[in-house]
Image 1: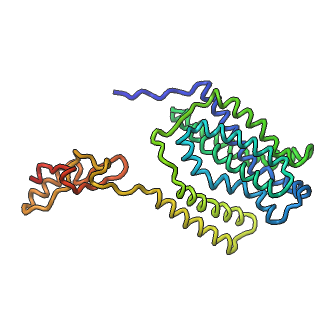
Image 2: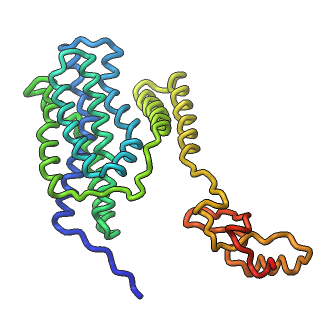
Image 3: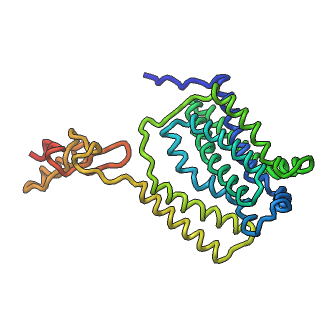
Length: 315
């Protein structure tokens, strides 16, 4: 019997793709828009050298460090809902950054922009995967999304330079507001809500470890690109890799016990040692599980005769 082919995307789904691509393009633009605009706030706010670095990097650090955590949060409360909340937060943070009177407030606003961006970025891609069910259409949609993300980073400096020719430095942030208004206004009717039915609880310790893994690696990459290799870069990279290993270890599922659901009660048991080797080998050859309880992910061994009844070869 042939499986029913997945439904093809219609005008609403392609309209949703426009909204999602617009959102991710703006996130990419905001990451590079200060490349040419940074001298202007320097003259107005007179930040120190360290504050100037944080004005440029706070956005990228917050965005990268919270991607994994916000993806988990989106699975719990809804991807559309989190994207719309993040879009509103992005617009408000942009207004704060545009009119920041001090370097400290501008750094905080840039960090808030990164946090808001982290709520938007994973939701855009997960909504595309859930919206486009046909494999060919999904591939095309992800390609368009990727082009928006890449192109936004490339045109960011051009947008910043063009705005500075006609306005003050805060305009590079104010341009985010009308774009986010469009994203929210069109996202409400066009986007469809999706949640992970499992809704696993948020592991705050793993969230912290993922942040400690990603931020040092981002710092190392940015520093190498700007200043070359040095001891601080090596230390940050090693620290990030070590934290990443801890994160991966924490994400491994615990081994199931014989009474856990991973070992079904009707699975055949591992053949027990017997005084009759021929019988033992026969049981190994005819057992469909070969002494293991198979799950969709990893084979698990059942050693309890009470939960895994013996096969005929064990009698």
